[in-house]
Length: 493
Image (cartoon, rainbow, N blue to C red):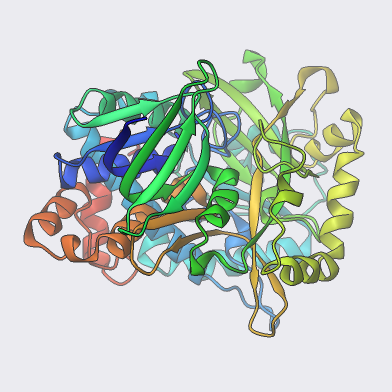
């Protein structure tokens, strides 16, 4: 059997692989790139609109990114970092729109105000302090705060209508927030890549074998599930961007950097309403505070979503325990990921996160009435018959060794790369897709270190992302310049 030689193999047809493929194509059009996807079409697991929160995570409304400190203050560093990362994605998407690679930006991104909403004395006190700290920084200067019933009626009519007038409430708003359909975005990027030379998309082709050759190149064996045909690939660089499926393949790679990593899978569900008379009354993303013991992916929010061009309201997500790493995965995924190098960290995490375990079990046994009762905290007039339950995508939170030898559950995304730069994997969940451009720049810097230092690659990267190599957190003038461009180009202003 002949071996298909390639420069780059992208495992997974989601937003991460598509973003990396697009960047590499712009940096060096001569690179021979192969994308392999286990399903029969791309962007159908975590990237799909129904499986992804689609918020355009920018730290504007997600309260879990600004935790309360022990002394009652609010830590904003993570929100600043995530916001700056999302600005990188906006720049990259703007470049593709300007180049005609992506057509109408409204096909994948739409202006949707990002709002936070709280009730009770403690909630209001927290939100006001959060607003004071964030709005003092140039990244969040346009944030608005209100406790006024009149303002709230304008900002979020569904949420305040028929609410107890004695209940103290507060909200913040950023008007230029966005809703992102990452499924549509990814399908457009892959369609463009298919139109370029030196690119091949292999669908229905899961990876069965991954190993490094003595010459430093990677052997990748895929089998077409429809025809049974086996294809042998060999590449100088492999990226594992397969969502929950990235961890098992990272383990197959056997690189030193993979040792000690485990995964904690969490499933999700949404309540969905597509009745026009209800959907038309709410045009924003409204985030609240997560229940005690809940994972960050379960921060409740009532969202305007536009998926494949159709508007809907989503509330949730409701988490649950699963042993699958992918929505279309195996119930044996979790057990198959256990290794001698990660067994102790995984046991340690299970022992020290009993609140989380109890929370997930409780979520599994909720009835439709229970879920709608949670929704009524945000939409007091919600009726059970107007909402249906929709399965969301799987998320695999990272478990890694802690300095004391135990394990630590990480809520976020992380790049794991071989020290020689020939392989990289993206693990974790939120903020995920929203920071894809920033994450893939990290991959390029770590895995193509010499090439990204050349004037050609540096210049091409700055064309794609004008703020490349500079800090949007520190440079207010630069932020204002790039934000003016992206809000205009993407029609978010």
